[in-house]
Length: 417
Image (cartoon, rainbow, N blue to C red):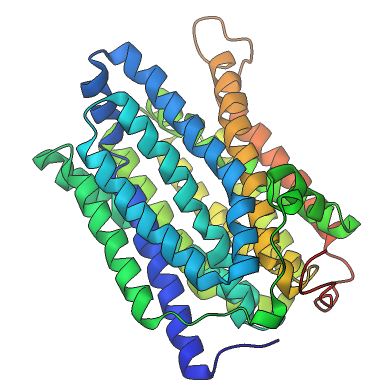
């Protein structure tokens, strides 16, 4: 595998981690104020709920449509220009949202945010380019830790700035994304040699064409299903966690925010510090299954916990869920050629986007059926138990799919086919 010299590779890894952290933090900064800004622009609380749901769907929809395109463009033109253009576009998009005079302009901003944040596919492909297969799980773990760090810092900063002005967090997000662009312009080397690039094709770049790559090998399609199940279960938290915490334990915004920050810190520790040593001892496949299994145990314990303190205790085994994603990504990258890494990450992002649309709808309906004066489901923690079963199924499928790991396949055609 071709790779930049060691000093350039170190600078590139640092840039990828810093960019991931800045990008996710810039997204997290606007989380506390976006619903309030929507309410301000809509002029009605009920309308704000509808608009907020629409904005979530717009963002996820753009991720589904554009991630394979961004990934395929990086396979054709290289990772560096695609990442830099996307980061710059994200900075300009936050400026647009900071100045948005109406909901329609804000909607345009969310559409552009979904498109530009699809550059994460190129970030993962970049890491695959510059790391050996046996080191990729650790590399993806570092990216995951950077993501978690951004999600911890972003909402905290956004909450402080939001007290000053609802527009201030958008300006801060624009500044952080602009800083990431300037930093990358100076230090980021290209990771994909010209002889490893693949000609761009809309047949592969559209989301349904990209998903065909996931069906190119039985093990790859099975691992893609595990990826879907993992994200499907994970979106339980965005769908019902705040409601569940308030209804069952009486927690308010402060307790929920503190708990989410704690989750992010634990995830940083697991993905940044534990993934590498555990993979060296157990291998990618076993580590993935261990992570999924602990995630299932943790979520089940959360659903069964009769008190808030026991719910917090259940976060400890659940934190080891963070072992699963980096190792799953590593296993999948070994089953495609170097020139298809961008397409693979685009297809993976489309899969996660589908889960991001379907999962909140499903778990929201399950939760609604488990609360109220005459619930259809008799137990308030039913959504957590179902998510635990989904993860357990993913662990079983992952154990089967991860068998017989092979060396990376040879390039079928560096110029495309």
